[in-house]
Amino acid sequence: MNNEASPKNNPSRRDFVKNSSLIAGGLMAAPLLSSANFFSGSEATIKIALVGCGGRGTGAAMQALLSKQKVKLVAMADAFRDRLDECFNTLNADDISEYSSTVKNLKDMIDVPEERKFTGFDGYQKAIALADVVLLTTPPGFRPIHFEEAIKQNKHVFMEKPVATDPAGIQRVLAAAAIAKQKKLNVVVGLQRHYQNSYRELFKRKDLIGDITSAQAWWNNDGVWVRPRQANQTEMEYQMRNWYYFNWLCGDHINEQHIHNIDVINWFKNGYPVKAQGMGGRQVRKGKDHGEIFDHHYVEFTYADGSILNSQCRHIPGTMSRVDELLVGTKGKILCGAGSIVDLKGKSLYKFDSSKENNPYQTEHEELFAAIAKGEYKFADAENGAKSTMTSILGRLATYSGQIIEWDKAINSGLDIHPKVYAWDATPPIVPNSDGYYPVAVPGVSKYF
Image (tube, rainbow, N blue to C red; front, side, top):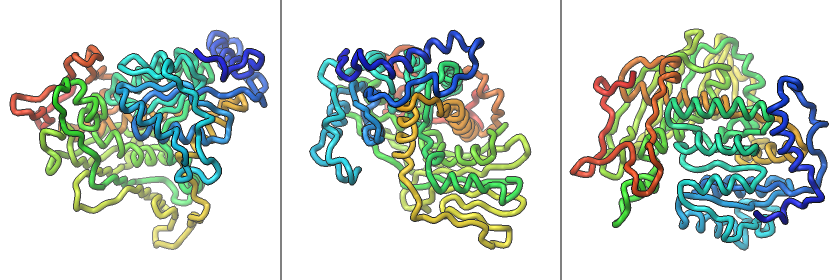
């Protein structure tokens, strides 16, 4: 461990992390600590570890380093060395003007020598140990394991959405989230609409539409990449490289991407559905390279007050493209993508000034690191992140089975779709048949409970 970024004569940040651990044990005696108990105003550097070095991990690391605080990337971990190297080289580019108008490059904020680059399935543990803040950006199937470890090691966390791929993973995240609260560890989840100016302004004014009676959410577009199988790959490596198409790693695109829209409706409803039913399948994306996921889902989510969210997501080129949310109330409508609120006759009640829009990906890091630098405890996103992820999983179980899936039954089911062993020569939980095709859920046939 390199101590240059953590001078012994500047203990404030270490004290903050240490105090967080002590607080857990003394919580009953001191249930609420003011910011005066924490670090404030120190010149200490906030040390960052990146776990997951793909495209989103590279972006998250860059946004953390541009957060205006004194930060340094000190450790990196990824299952694959080539992904780690690609990320490292991108972050060390001579010119990042594409991302920042004020910073030419990030080289002074990166201190990751060979001994702090970790690969394989267990590299995350070593990287987490070296940091104050951990960025968790692997495929979401690993999020429960990595989040548990980060909280166990008393680290503040930024983690990408979704935060799990099955109900068993959701329960692990909820348990770790409760401990994070006890320890007063800041946790931000990359559901970035919560940090986007237009959505925040709409949320402040949501009462203009009265009681929300229904909603619609869309994530319809062409889809994502495919990484064809390479010679000499084990089945585990192939699935890890092509992770989007396997549920234990991704959770299907209703989980990986449509969660953004579903989460907005949960946020404005201030609750989560009690049940779901829906339909879906594979019309176009059904080759050997497409694993087991569907290319379209349509779900009716029912909330406790009887209101309905009609949710649709589709990955089919050449079809209507829309990523958006609509909420309908007793007095009007909120059109999220347009940043507007209208009454039931269409009269404008509010229009967001688009010139005031921000980059929410950057804002979520700026607010997280500002809080940590001041020794403040402000963010506890993990519980909502877990429950919005569970909403997406509920939808997947409904479309795969064609059955009505109840929230309580699903989240308490213990359903676990993960491998028993994480190793390159281990057998994944799903394997292709002799023709190279993977088994796919069939509505009316596939059952979970």
